[in-house]
Length: 221
Image 1 (cartoon, rainbow, N blue to C red):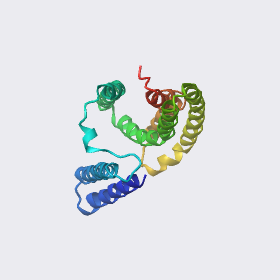
Image 2: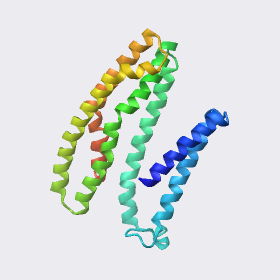
Image 3: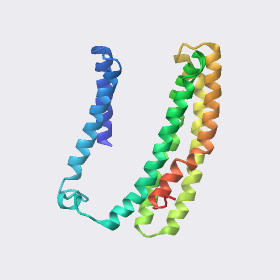
Image 4: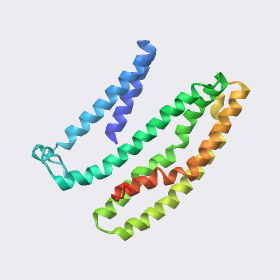
């Protein structure tokens, strides 16, 4: 968490300097983001090699060929990578479709996406909860507890998502006050947010959080 906080501070300060001081445009946003990610990767790697820590890397272990361990890791990683790859391809396809729309539609899509990112926070935040809880149950060999907690977390995630997406939908008119939009664009933004939040509240919990729980249990199928 500390590394994440420092990384975000580096990113924000770097963006401010890159955009407003150096006037670097897109590069002024991209480089600070890259530097922040590199810092996070370097910091966590150094910490993981700390010999005084309860769990630490060992140099001899990193290059050790453990067939069963590799099979277990790749059995989760490869399907997960394929799933994420398909998701990104769909995003590219949708972007190419949106590029064919008119000015109002493109503007509405851009504004709606910024609101969608807020609406998706509830479902995204529950993913690590599934991984932690189900991973602990499976590590203890208690599959019954893992199954029970997945059901409980499903109910909790849906409830939180419904409330959160409802709040974001109610606040959408306030968000749009920040933007200088034409009435037609505002109407489109609201329609897009309604459609997104409905699916995000009732469908995404079984796509995001639940899939994290199943992967934590090793059930990638």
